[in-house]
Image (tube, rainbow, N blue to C red; front, side, top):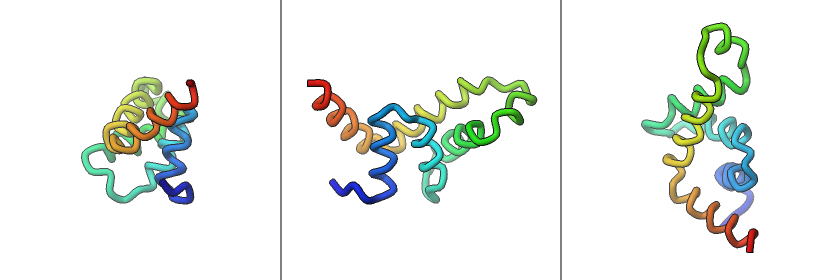
Amino acid sequence: MRDDTKLARIRKAMLHGDWETALRLAARFQRLGEHAKAIRRAADTIAHPLIYQQMGLDLEKIKNDGIVALKERFNKSWEEVKKLKSKKEE
């Protein structure tokens, strides 16, 4: 597995539980399919939290929805991350 790609950076962030970085990086991808809205909105709430707070939206829910979408979109990658994480814990 190459470690010099954008996807590798997302995997690394996911492995370390750095969801904010993973969301920000993934939000730049052009083809996110049905997950684009959730991922981009979550990344936007990280970049501009006050706007979303003023609208009365639940930032944690938006972020969690983005994380779920991220895991679903990069399901194969997420499985690789979980394997790496379990190996590190052993």
